Image: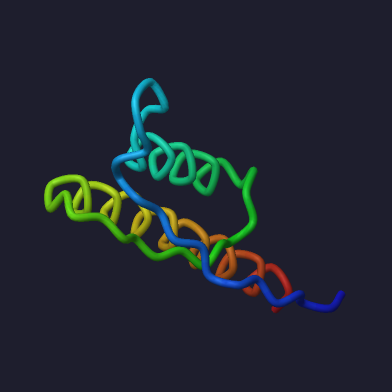
Length: 79
């Protein structure tokens, strides 16, 4: 199968009233990556909220680790 280019997506922490936060979105992505329900995304963060930025980056880094581990496991199965 051919890979399709995905332009990077940028995530802000402060999404507005009653919309949750970018951290909520990052946690959702982290959980979906862990469970294998979401294909790898290219994500960046843009926020003036330093605590929110750190939390989002931690969750997205975990998601990236899950995706990398899943790729390694698939490659090992092919050997």
